[in-house]
Image 1 (spheres, rainbow, N blue to C red):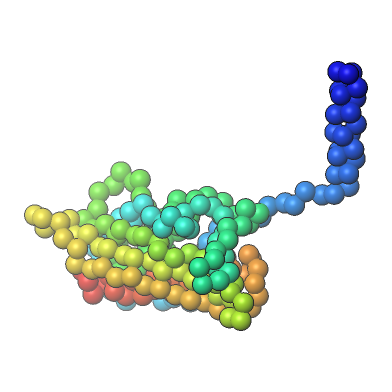
Image 2 (spheres, rainbow, N blue to C red):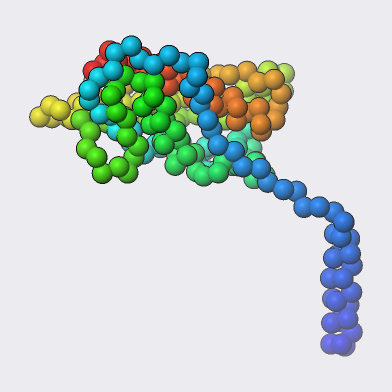
Length: 202
């Protein structure tokens, strides 16, 4: 009886393996959000102070590396086959610091983790990061970011600036490639606005 059972199991395993031969496994694609700088003119007045960008926090629904699509009013889906190269927070903090360093009003902008001290810290929280792929609506990349500027030059640290900035970029198609490109454009739009704000806030 035992021998017959082993033979039966072996036959099933071989049959399943044979069925899968020739069927390629679906591959994965990885992406990075790259906010373009070329279209944004540098700040006319560069301050001597240094700004540190804090570690970027991302709201829980969008904090994993998988791309997120909105499919209905309350229905969302994570795509395990199309992902960011790293968790969004870890990917974005360096990109934001680089963008603000080249375009923003501060003389020098340093990323999180640097040992260099800075009188100003920019705390960043991403509240929305998804592709709006609802039926009957044009596809769009949706990004919203909350910024808080901390001034450490006073005896008591204060927050002279706090704002949530959102951007919605319509896409030419419902695809991961178009979505991530839209994320880059949305983030550049948001950073241009916060850079202008920071110039007057300090």
